[in-house]
Length: 161
Ligand code: MG
Image 1 (cartoon, rainbow, N blue to C red):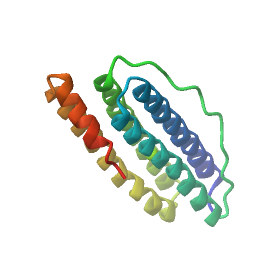
Image 2: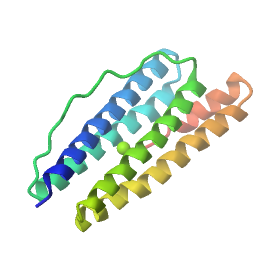
Image 3: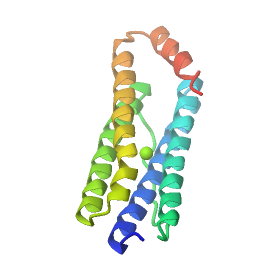
């Protein structure tokens, strides 16, 4: 059984994951409209991953006798000034998500819930990868001096499975 306090904290994170999924979907729409179909595809995959994070958290709660809930999911921003600005936003957002996951680990620790801490380490590791991936794209895009370089990256990211 998982404590009420921890259930509430995980439910808040489920809403945050769904917000992230919507943010990346909005970015995907924007990129598609601007003609960057590869970036748009990458962002749609990213959105699906966030939905899956919410699903994994809900499944974990059910296993532990908790009740997963979808709280208020706020509107997401729209309109960016180009692909670099979009990916800078992704990096900034992933750093924010890392903080949320760290806080969640702290709640699990305070509740002395070892199983939940163990479950959350997977997300802690995932965030290291998410930050690194976003930062790598931002750096590569900063090096791409012309539109040819940007479209080269667009094609590469379009190959994401
Ligand atoms: Mg996530």
